[in-house]
Image (tube, rainbow, N blue to C red; front, side):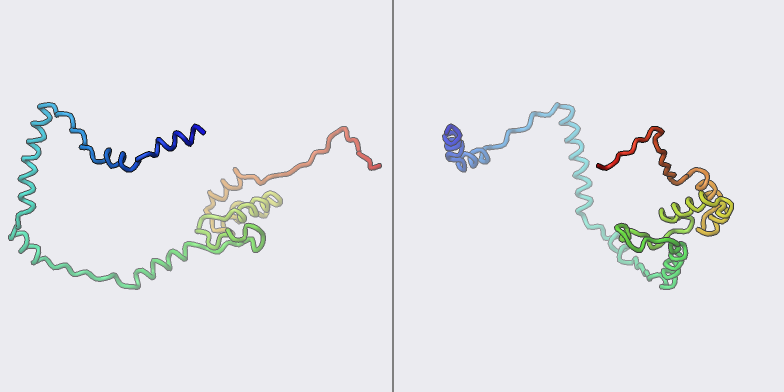
Length: 177
C-alpha cells in the first residue's frame, strides 16, 4: 500500500516540474585563468585572419584550377582477367572430401598450393604411420604439392592418435542371473 501512495506523489505534476527544470538558465562556466584567457584571445585573432583568407575569393587560384584537365581511362580488361586466372591457378581441388555427414557443409572446395586440408593431413599421417617405407616425405610432398621441408617437419612433429585399450590385470566378469 505504501508503494501506491509514494507513486502518486512522485508522478504528481511531473510534466510541469520537467518543463521548469528544462527552462532554467544553464549555469555559467567558471572564469578562466588570466594567462589562459590571453592565449585564447591570441588564438582567436590568428584564426580570424585565416577565416578571412578562406572566405575571400582568390581569382588566381580559381583560374589555375580551371586550366587543369585530368583525363583518366580504365585499364584494359585483359589485365584484370589475368589476375583472376593466376589466382585460380594457385589453388587446387582437395583429394579427399567428406561427401556426407554433419560436416559436409563446411568442407573446403579449394586448397591453396603449399597447404593441405585437415582431412588430407589426417589421411597422410595415418598412411605414413602404417607404411612409412612407401609414404616418405618426398612422396607426400609430390602427392599434395608441398615443399619437401614442410612435409618432412609434418611427418616428424605430428603423430596421429593411437588408441590402445589395456585390459586390467585383475578382471572379474559380471554374469547375468
